[in-house]
Length: 228
Ligand SMILES: C[S@@+](CC[C@H](N)C(=O)[O-])C[C@H]1O[C@@H](n2cnc3c(N)ncnc32)[C@H](O)[C@@H]1O
Image (tube, rainbow, N blue to C red; front, top):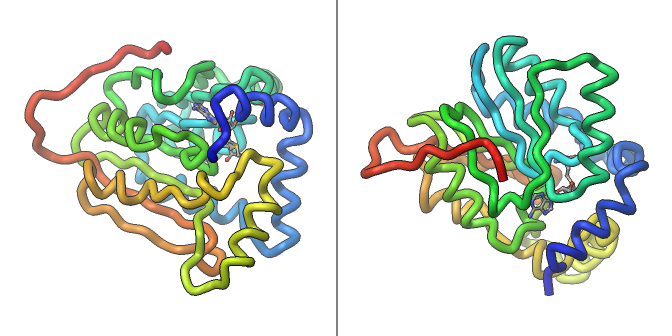
């Protein structure tokens, strides 16, 4: 079973203060986290002045990269379920004096994306959301035509024995990862509602970067607000 929303929130409330330190420890196992983050932001193909939303932004480890991409005239919105993770992100924003960052406490499934929207990123968060397909669909509908949704996350690598998968889940269980969550396939939901979806496996197939573009033409369309 995947964890309930409340369980996930409790996991991250406990982790928040040391999240940056503990998540970066995976670098010691060759997991090139800073490089993967940089490549995920590059895959968004943002321009100066754009508005970008980071779903499950946590402590805000992507904010500096996103700000660099959209410039001071752009806008970065971080959305997260967990108050204490957002407190950490707010601390970063305050210390750095960033004025074009908005942090929203909200369940991603309930979030109404701003308009116009030029990019959506989610790093190591989408597989924790049981209704990930709905979040992806909402993002695809809210994005301006041709603009991108980018996911960076862990996944089950193919061709490895079952025990290696179980070990991987065990090693990441402290971050709310369960067998059920690790078997989710968000890239399939992306392929259902975005165009030019491409995927690159990272870390021997145990992680991936996936990006796709909002359709150029669609019937109807939805313009959302900015709150939860
Ligand atoms: C592993 S952390 C990733 C944080 C950040 N994106 C990063 O790359 O470091 C997962 C984050 O997803 C958030 N999260 C989990 N379920 C969520 C949901 N339904 N809506 C919004 N955020 C959620 C958690 O609160 C947590 O901050």
